[in-house]
Image 1 (cartoon, rainbow, N blue to C red):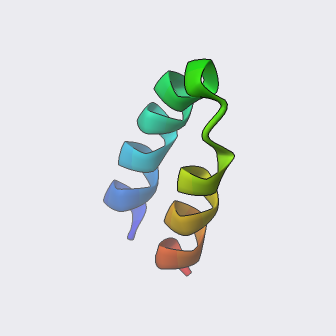
Image 2: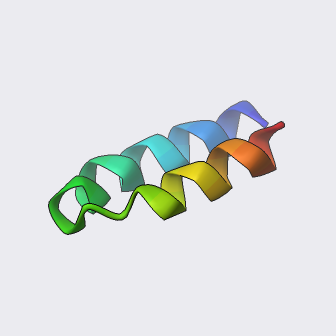
Image 3: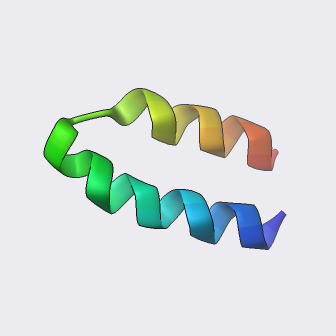
Length: 32
């Protein structure tokens, strides 16, 4: 669970450029 969260966080930074907040939401949901 923690590992997946960290991985998603890294993508979030790269997605910031693409403004892809959807990917972050999915990652958080999967974490839960």
